[in-house]
Length: 414
Image (cartoon, rainbow, N blue to C red; front, side, top):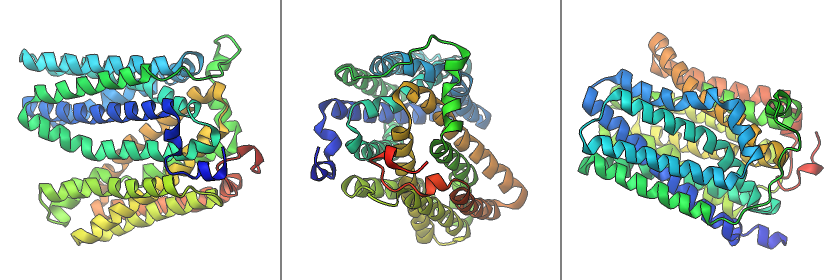
């Protein structure tokens, strides 16, 4: 493929299998957002318990942590397309089960948590498989374009999905679960329609050596280790999102609509950058570009923490989303290009758990610090910590900082 073609903003969509995969992933992410919003609202309506709301996230995250040694190996050894499609079917069944509980007035926390555990197990297997499938559907020169569009679709679903879920739930909880069920089925059908891609599977029999290959590869490949750990600590320290309700009510004195604008702002910034990167991919100094993105994320976090004006806070959140998208674009592309296909699933399984852990622990850090020193200090300290991480990682991982092109990993200095 020529350089002109690879620079095409729609280059990834020239491949029919990727187009089907893209639509499927969007439908799946959209359905997940609708289901998550509906089950959270219904749980609170039925129980009035904030503790149960916290349990919803926990029971969905734990399977990824507990199954980390299994999910990645499965994604490497078996048909990733079939795994993703099967996971979408299981998701649809979970949505259908919640629908039945609602229709028969049997919405009990224990039953709901049991369904969400299954949903969490599905997501644990789906995450490494879906992350590993995309690089099998496009040539290396179009991978950066595919990563940008993947991130854009996820951000769009994360912005619009909760709003649609809330509107549907406002009509009825059963309608919300029905729509998510239909979307999950549509996602499964589209994945089944993807032509089976070439996939290199491990030649060795299953053993502890092969199961731990993902960890071993990450700690042996400094570029991948630097990229994954940078994301882990940057998000861990910059977790201002969890404190948005506090800022909306107590600091910015905004109502529910204002809180909605605050929540949407990072996604808007991320989408704008994702579209720009799809049209104008990073050609040179990719490593420096990534570290600048992390630093700007930290700076935006500090501005948000100090701001007492709504428009400035929204602008800071948009900057945070845009900067995060810029760094994620480079990190995801590097991880995809520098990871051999035969261990891609296991590496992505570790990466997904690290990302999940950083989000969960980041919220815990922000909440705990806000309790001890106040929300403003908690956010500002976190932003300063993210800036420090950008500097320390840039110095500690020179191989990562010196990455130039995202299209030819074999030519980069290790």
